[in-house]
Length: 251
Ligand code: NDP
Ligand code: 8X3
Image (cartoon, rainbow, N blue to C red; front, side):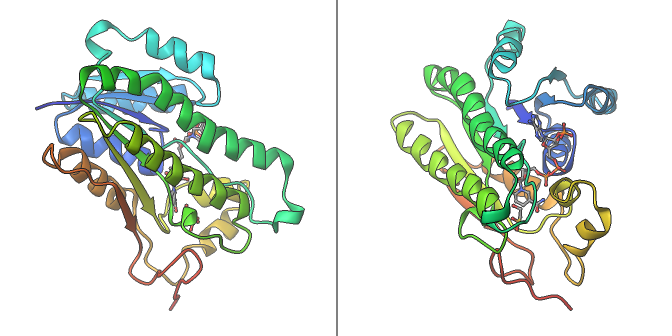
């Protein structure tokens, strides 16, 4: 049965890959992001292939905008079946005692508070309907800190704890909660982390075949379509030559 799937940060990387996979699966999509032009282009591409799409342009850090956009959805789009909390970022790789206050605030406001905002706004309807699925994009970074990862790792550890907490809080309903924890995925992630230093970003994926957004989207799609009595609670997805956040074998 076709589902209504809301994906945050649908304009790039893992969010865009999920967008395309769920569209191919025949689902209806609510795509959110900050880049209106990119969202429109993606929506046009998918609409041409027969997918029903709505786009919502807002920053997940802006609680009031998020609230207004969701409340403004037409009635037939209100019953969201799957929420993919994907929007997020890392900024910097400095030691904790030298990090940027501004970068820390952006990561915490986006990766933790933005995810919480979306959860708070969407999940009550799921609980009321006794149907729904939240797929949070955590990270191997949330399992253990790595050098320079400090605040980013802490935000992804928070995603794990918030996923576990939510799973407990909805355990008396049919709502499911999944925390997907990718390792190295080649997206725009490292360009953002290094503030546009593309050479430094490219080095992150040197000597190893990294994951792609599609690899993560495949798992998200599997989790969303697992039989109703099956809850894929948490999945760690690594490149074959990556063993943990800090053990990466490059050849
Ligand atoms: P990308 O930079 O390619 O995509 C990030 C997406 O999030 C973009 O669409 C971006 O939109 C959006 N976004 C960022 N900040 C906001 C915001 N404040 N409001 C709305 N949208 C926002 O990176 P990835 O696809 O790699 O990252 C997606 C998620 O996956 C993140 O949560 C990241 O932490 C996680 N992750 C990534 C891994 C990797 O190795 N790449 C590994 C593990 C987890 P915009 O263009 O407007 O900035
Ligand atoms: C993104 C993967 O290893 O750069 O969460 O933290 S990593």
